Amino acid sequence: MNKLLIALLVVVLIQSTANATEHAAANHFVDYWNMGEQRNEITTEVFTQDFIERRGATGLARIMNMLYDDNGDITVHSITSSDAEQITFMASSERDKWMNITLDLAPGLKINAMAVARSGAPPKAEDKNLSSEEVVIRLQQYMADRVAKGEFSGSILLAQNGRPLFAEAYGLADIENGRENTLDTPINLGSMNKMFTGLAVTQLVAQGKLAFTDTVGKHLPDYPNQQVRDRVTIHHLLTHTSGMGSYWTDEYEQRKDSITTVGELAELFVEESLDFEPGAQQQYSNCGPVVLGLIIEEITGQSYYDYIRKHIYTPAGMPHSDHYTKTESASGKANGYFVPDDSAGELVSNEHIRGNIGSPAGGGYASANDLLAFATALYDGTLIDPDYREQMTTAKGSRNDAGGYAYLYQDGRVNGKRYVGHNGGAPGINADFSVFPESGYALVVLSNTNHNASPVADQLRQWIGYAVD
Image (cartoon, rainbow, N blue to C red; front, side, top):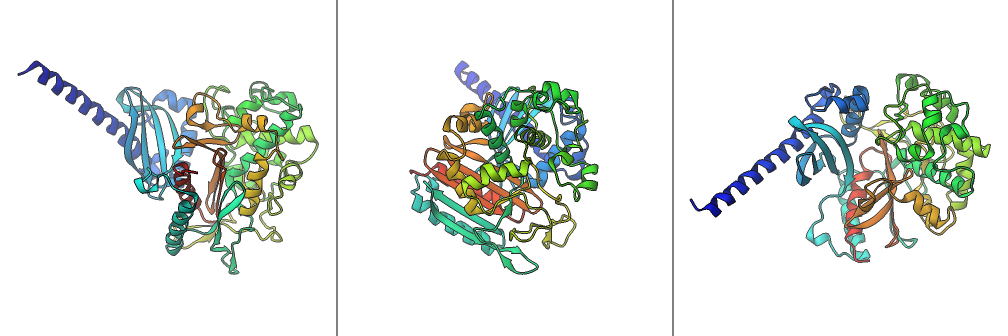
């Protein structure tokens, strides 16, 4: 046989084997993701022993269950890149969400690290090079279809350079009393509230009252946990690299209806050991922002909630935003609704699973109109000097060029175009906020039913990312 032909066959065989390995690694992870309650059994069949020890079996199970609760079953769409040690693939979910998943691999296709980043659907040829008018036409058609199917309740606001291009509210804020959502209805933001905590900290840095390199102990010398007090910095807390976890424990469930202050919430976790050495890796944390809330209170002499009202909501012009308590009704806030797994498909209120009040990690409220005002104030210098704003919103670490996580802000890319913001989600809650600084687009999608805002925001970001203006 011709030597050249043999060489070509060998190359094809090697490539086919590599492709098979790529898909096997991706499918191995997807099978585990979709396996139901067995997902709680963290074993070395799927993960390396080192990864399990770094994250903790309980912590790893919690992360996987949170991912599943937000997305449902997933399917491999395409392999983006791969080699013997790492694979990145795009996946779609049964809830119309898309994500890029990166896995660091060890022998036997075992996972030694993972990262899951939300993405929009792959763009279609007809969705490229759109004008702003064409983006709006597509959005109108898209939302008409979703609303007709009963797949959205909440509000959407798309603006460019402060001018609304599309602003609509849908569905009921209060199903029991037939009250409709409006663009001024406060809707629970979930983790989107982290943006305000990040901004508050950066305002204090700009005033010289703290530094990103300060340890927790510099401002909270009596913080009970010596690990956190002496080794965790403001930078670690802002980037989810502190080694702290989340506070949704059995004790939280017992006390959530009586908690009224940031300090009372912190009592739930102050004695917990760190999951890893600060700065060694990234792990999404809700305890970290709570500690930042304590530091804000210590430096300013105000409650966290008062500080955010006075220094963010009021100067930005956000009259329909606050950390409302669960029983508060004067604001006209929306109730949250979700479909429990064990129900017959009917929406139920999320009041019984929400805490009494949100925290520096999330759970506050804002309206669509207020968040457009926030986008304007964030970029016109009202709330923060531009240099500090960019320091706050620019991704930290090795992923700068492709985006990543900044100081409690997401720094994303679509078609190379940068957007800044955050999202949030929980049963009965889904919210998404994005600003495209170069093109001036601002996008707000708020939903008082879970899983409904993110698919809309992901699709809109795709259209904006491929728009011509």
